[in-house]
Amino acid sequence: MSKMDPREIKILSDILALVLEDQQGQSDSALEAIKARARRDGITGGALKNLFQTLAPDIDRLTAARTTRDEAELRAQENTLQILRVQLHDRGEILNRMEHNLRIVRGNNENLKSQLHLAQAANSELQSMLSMKMMDSRYPRLMIIFVAVAAGLLTGIAGTQLFHLFYTALHPVTDNARYLY
Image (cartoon, rainbow, N blue to C red; front, side, top):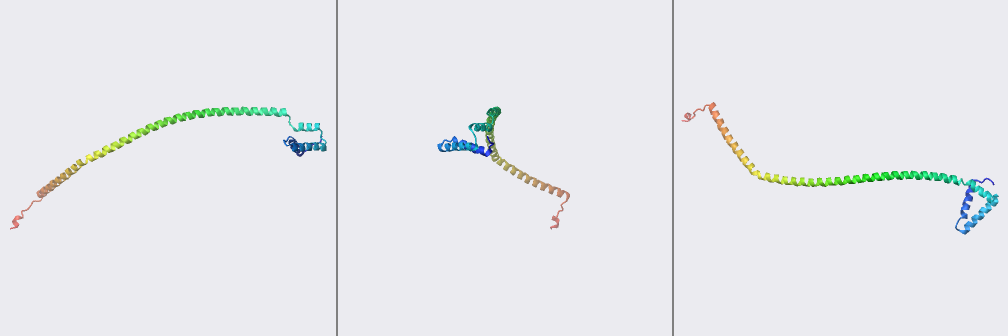
C-alpha cells in the first residue's frame, strides 16, 4: 500500500459519504469512483480496511477517555447544580425575610400616617381655637389702650402742674399789677 496524502484521504472520505446518500444516482456514481481510484492506486479491500484502521484512532481508548471526561463533567455539573440549589435556597430565605420586613415597614408606615392625620387634625383645631381667642381678646386691648391714653394725659397734666409749682417756688413772681396803673 502506498502512502496517501491528506488531500487524497479527504477526497476519498467525501466520495465515501456520497455512497451513503439517499439518491440512487449519486450513490452509484460515488461507488464507481471509489472502485476506479482503488484500481488506479492498486488498493485492495484488505488494504482499504487497514487504511481505515490506521486512520481511525483506537475506539476503546477514545471511548474510555470520553467516558472519563463525561463523568468528570457530570460531577462538575452536579456540584454546580448543588451549589446553585443552595444559593437558590439562601436567596429564597432572604426574599422571605425581606417580604416580612416589608410587611412590618408597611404596617409602621400606616401607623405613622394615622398619627400624622391625628396631629394635623389637632393642629387645625388648635389654630381655630387660637384665632377665636384672638378675636375675643380685641376688646380688652381697646380698653387697655384707652386706659393707657387716659393715664398718660393725667400724668402729663400732673407733671405740668408740678413743673409750674417748682418753677414758681424757685423763681419768685413779682407783682406786675402795680405797674399797670
